[in-house]
Length: 140
Image 1 (spheres, one colour):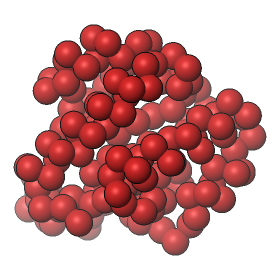
Image 2: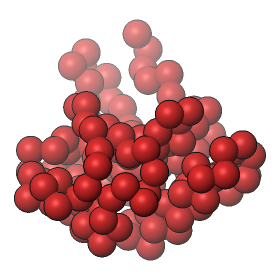
Image 3: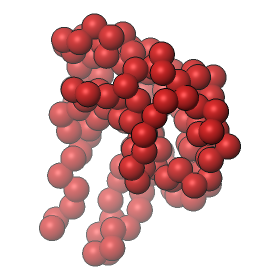
Image 4: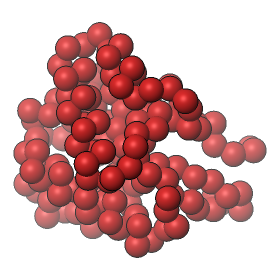
């Protein structure tokens, strides 16, 4: 394998969100765009077809190849919002206990809609995740 298939594009995050057909997902995505921009201080970058990433960290794959990926971000899927918490969830159990309704898998937090979670706790989770990534990796 010559590297990651999902790469940064020149697509507009705002346009991607405007083109969403589901009104609740579109509204939630616009809120997430503003929230992630404020928390990270980074401009959004669309990775692949649907990931809106913020910041970038650099690491080595198991194969030894250098790779980059967003520090955090989100994607609007058909059935949920997928939030990327790259350090995983073990460091954030106290926040997760207070978050609300969600599911997790590896580094993905799945939320049906923002109304299902405590937005203040959600903001703390994103901020803590970004801070931990910046401690662990070389980030831009």
